[in-house]
Every structure is written in C-alpha cells, then in structure tokens.
Amino acid sequence: MDRIVAEHLRRLVPPGSANYYAIRFSPRNGREQIGLLFAWREELLRIARECSDAGVAQARLEWWRSETANACRGHARHPLAQALIPLVSDEKLPLALFDQMATAMKRQLAGTPSSDWAELQQHARQLDGSFCELLARSLQTPEDKIESARQIGAYCWLVGTIHNLGWELRQGRYLLAHEPLQQYKLTPDKLLLQKYAQETAAFIDEALETAEQWRQSTTQHLERHPLPALRPGLNLYALAHRHQRLLAQEGAKILQRRPELSPLEILWHTVIAGWLRF
Image (cartoon, rainbow, N blue to C red; front, side, top):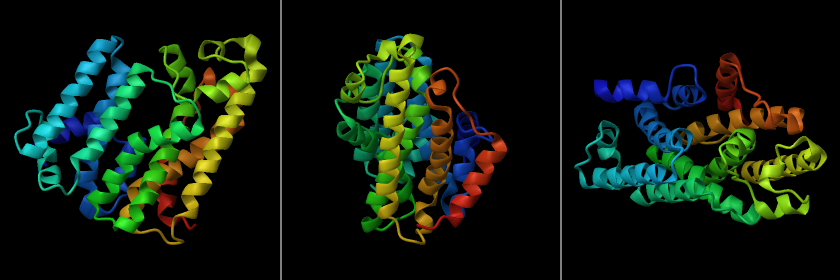
C-alpha cells in the first residue's frame, strides 16, 4: 500500500477502534481492500461530524461522489480514490453501490425524514447495507449471500443511529422514523426535555424492539456456519449486537451519555464474531 494512503488510513481507522478490529479480523487476503472501503465510508461520516454548514457538507459529499466516479475512469486525484481504482475500474465493485451510499448520506445531511420503520429500513439498506455489500463483494461473496450482507448493514446502521441519537439531536438532526415518534406525541426537540422522559423512554424501547426485529430477520437468512467472506460484516454485527444490549440496559439515559465499549471489549467481540453460529 502506498505510504500516503497508509497514513491516511491510520488517521481514519486508528488502531484500537471498532473499524480497526473489524478489518484486522477479516480474511487476510482482503484486509487491504476492506481497509480502503472503511476509509471511504469514514470520509462520508466525517462530513456529518465536521460540517456545520449544510452547503459545505453537500459540496464535500458531491466531491467524493465525483472522485469515486473518476476512480472508475482511472484518473482520480485524491490518494484514497486512486487506491480504489483497481477495485472499481473493472467493475469488481459497482459504482452504483458507492452512489447509493452517497445518496443516502445526502438524505441524512438534509435531514429528510423517514415516515415509518419500513421506510427507514430502506434508507439503512441504501447506506450501510450498500457498504456491507461492498465489503462482501470485495471478498467475492456468491450472489445468493449478498442479501445477508445488506441486512447486516441495515441492522448495524439502526443500532448505531439509536446509539448516537442524543448527539445527533444536539446537532439539529433526527434520523429515525417520524410516525412512531408522533404516536408518543413527541417531536425531535422534545426528546431531550426532562418533562417528556416517560414518553421518550417508551419511544426508545420501541426503537430497540425494532432493532431486535431487524436482527432476528438478519440471522434467519444466515447459514449456521457463515462464509468467511461475510466476516467483515459479521464483525460489525457482533459489535452492534453488544451495543444493542448496552442500549437496552441504559434506556433513555443514552440521550445524555452514550454507552461505549472499551478497546478490550471491541477486541473480544470481533474475535468471537468468527465463532458465531446461527
């Protein structure tokens, strides 16, 4: 791997992070390309974290979308996009999947709401579902197993979004479904107010129950001994499942303090992802 790309990757995926171990415990022959895909996704996520100006955020997103298209044509400028050229120029990884992720991220940045859990699931499949499909395709996963990868990604996205709910609200963004919120006579701005604590707790319980339904639907489609090519997604699944249990223990308190896994816990749960049986 080029030195500049390797340094960029270390900044985006630092040692000890969840993404670092998700890569580290993936099949050895695919770790470099998997690392590049994690770095590309991290560039999209950085936009939401770092850009308070909506116009700047959209411009950065479109720049990355354009750079990925340039990589498919073999003449990208950014070192990371250049490193992706061997993966995308021969359509081993379809540009459409990168585009789907960028489109879903654009929707998030714009704060475009999903009406219900079903619509939210489509959004989750488009964003992290597409990402897990890219991971799976990079390891030449058979076509009949690709759907499992997309379901894993959607489930992980929902758990991560519930986990970050309080932080996103303080940034002025609400990324979950609106109709379930309205059933509790809540609006996004009310979720952080103590006077609505009971309704908020009930809503978070429903969101976590929805995550559990998505998880069970995901595992029903997995073989008892999943293919090694699904290991990157299963690493993320194992971490999301542990986070889901932590969130259930904390309830509405997650809006004030996000429960985090220690580096040792992250290491352990990515190790045991290789032992998962369904």
